[in-house]
Image 1: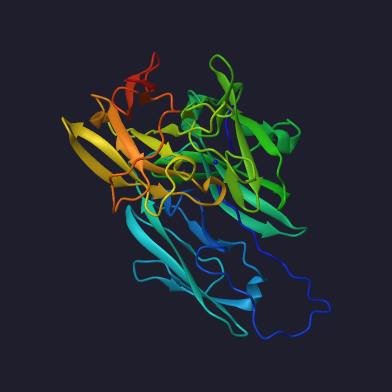
Image 2: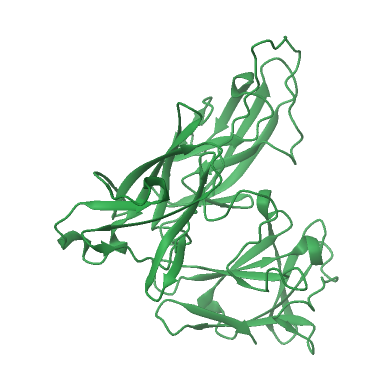
Amino acid sequence: MKKFFLFLFAVALIFTGCMKEYDEVPIPNSSEAPYLKVTGAITNGDTAYAAPNIFLKFWLDSLPSAVDNYTFSWNLDGGDYSTATSPEKKYSAGIYDVSVVITPVNGGASITRSIVLVVDNSSAWETTLILLSATPVSGSNYDYAIAMRTTAIYNYSNIAADPWDRGDFTGWDFNYLTETTTINGILYVVDHVILPANETQVQRFTYGKGNVYAYAPESRYWIITAPGEGVFEVYLTNGQMSPNPVGAGLIPGDNGDLIGGAYAPTIRTEIKYSSIPLCDSLRIYVNYQQYANGPQPFLGRLLNNDNWQNIALVLMSGDYAGWCYQTFAIKDLANGLYFRFGPSLTAPNAYGQMENSKFFLPGDNMLGLQITSGLKSGTYEIRRM
């Protein structure tokens, strides 16, 4: 099955029918809401990843009052600025710093929110299903424009039929699609799904052409239903498309230490596939809050002999608070990955508890994993050294 892939667009509406005038709109400190969100990108911690040349929409989730009570000053990088509530922009490949200053119109302190935007044509963070836009419509609903990659359907261009999709949102009736778009040379069909803003139920669906279904196990939204078969599975809530349900305390990654076992998972892993040969990567997630809580968690990688490389871990927030991560090129891991982690990069002599992880090497007091190509081309197996 496939999972339909993360971004929340929430605007807190305050009932104003009998609301009296007030002097200040509350604005929280910089470690709290609101959160800067990017529709059309995949966000991990303080970094968002997107493909080039698609419209990205920037907005703020969990404002404490209605948007009309604030002014917005956006720096979209590249010399582009905006005072819109939710500006949009296309980006070419590169790394950008996007920020916004939020100011209450009736007085109060301004705060700044920022995010690093990585626009990369080589890293296929998700190319099968893309949320093009999420537009508020009447009745407290959202119109989700979802692009579906036609190359996931075998012999698509030679099938004399209209493309279609069917799923929970159509009652599993065929919904024929007429809208298309091309992104980075890939042809997509586009469907518009209208759902309530507060929808929390999972949406499962498939798409195809003629009697041929899509097959896309590389997608983060794909769920296997039988050998060689699957569907897409997504959550569409408050303008965000995600493979994960709404709620706190989610656990990242699709592999690693057991979820729901005797101990909280220590290490989780995830493969990041690339459209460029030999450019796939492995992301390591560390449960630092549980096992190495500190101001600047880091990962120490053993390079050779007793030569260690200490690397800062990227903190995650929101539903993944308490986790952090670092990414490694798989082509650089031919001899495996030996590592440990600690709470403070400024004092990298203390290390977290690692004994609960299935990757733990007791004799060396470190973690070790190897990654090998799986039985199926383009897949990998991650195991303890």
